[in-house]
Image 1: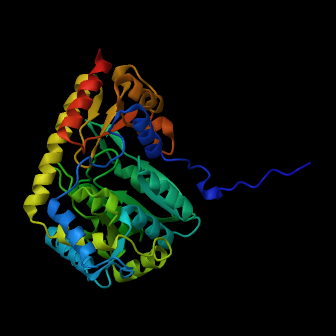
Image 2: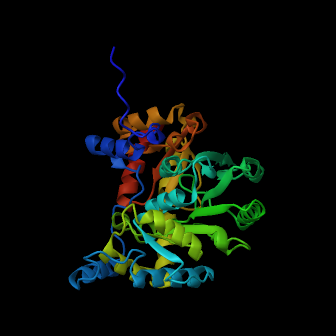
Image 3: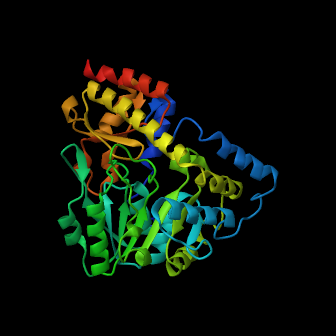
Length: 393
């Protein structure tokens, strides 16, 4: 009798297969559908930022390995951005670390700070890399679910407090929140900060959508609250703010001992990346407030264009306060299974979306939710809206 072959995939990753983004993007290509699934724009960002990258390439800046912590120009620009926008002061040399996008920053932070068996409390539904990175670190994820109420997804602070145990190592907070579009309020953030201080928890905050907030919502970094600067790893990136998602330039800001810990893990992942683009992003962060205001206003208009079209097609729409995304409920369409709905949608009307069920530990929780991205050209969104109207007929 022969023994069963040993599985090739590490058991910590056994529950994770091909990401839904790869599956749905391949489906979009195969069917020629409009891809409103994965969150990337279909236009480039500011011309002056693109030209800054070209200039860096031509001048030979960053064509070889950049410094491990990131080029000084970008670290200085990140620190200046935090000071200008949020009155947070960071030392560019000891409190800023450049990463290969926010996803690497999340991975490096969790690998550095989580011991096997530690509990990591995260807001669910969550970006799919969170679960995989917690697993790679040997941690145990503990979801606190944002639930629909009064037209948007909301955090239950009592549920958050109850989720924290003696085994909890850190909180993983995402605001503005992907995929729901929720922006945590000052009151909610103050309560999170109080809990973290009381229970002596570390906090990782994913703030990549910090400049994509709408209506009267306000992004407030958790590190600005009392007792939080020394225990918070704040993560952001250039991709969403400047519409150059392929450049993969991210960063963390944190106290020196936290940056040192994260860098210890990060150096064995990519080591360094995106040399010439780092110089370009340094210039991008120094753009005037008019750029950020105009970009936010344009995205809010796109949100409304797609949201109105989704309502007309029969979806229940949860109005997002931030991010690139609109979450919908497919129940009014007589549908119950988001995954099956998204797989059939390209054939039904030539549009691709993402089932929110993949962002939950228990898929049944988000079984009726579908996410659409609105970071597309007006013509693309208008055509998608026209196609989606077929669902209402």
